[in-house]
Image (cartoon, rainbow, N blue to C red):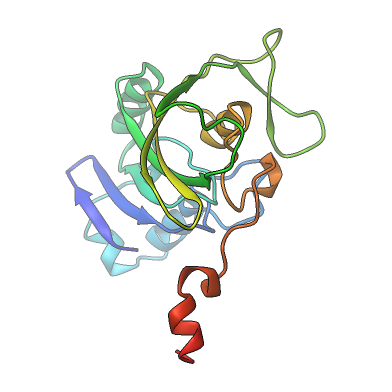
Amino acid sequence: MPILAEQADWIALEKPAGVGMRAYPWDAEPDMDAALNTQLQAGKPELLRCGAELFASVYYLDPVISGVAVFAKNRLALADMRNRFGSGECRFRFQCITAASAPGLQAAEIHADAPLLPHNVKPKMIPSTAKGKKAMTGFKRIAESSKGWVLWEATVDFFRPHQVRAHAAVLEIPILGDALYGGPEAPSQRDLHPKKQRAGV
């Protein structure tokens, strides 16, 4: 995986969709924490050169999310960075696509602050003012396609598993392809590049 940035105490990697960051009860995908540490213990030269005593994810990203994955290289750095993350000192921006016909498309900027609680049976989060934990997400519309899709930027200072996805559903702008939260089917390659498909490319 490409290295995006690196310092003595941490490393940032480009996480692709379909890969977990750390072991989580809902996830069946392989996780980066386990893979990196297994390879470090096996003496993989690329990882030994990092000077790490371990690799530990600072925060959790859902397997379906691609983006920047930050790993501490030692326990002291891990404690410090997780404390900063937990204190809301970090700012995260995610991009997601919704249908332009979604019921919640009423303003260019909308916010969700519904507390979130893990579902008793399903691998998803549900809003719950009684037992849910604090969660806040801001959504800003940044582009709209003539094909009927809207590109959003979601901003959070601290996020819980599935937070952006769950809050998008709460605001009635479920993310394309996210069937777990009621999102419509994602466009196919033919939908995205109709001219190329007709040309046989």
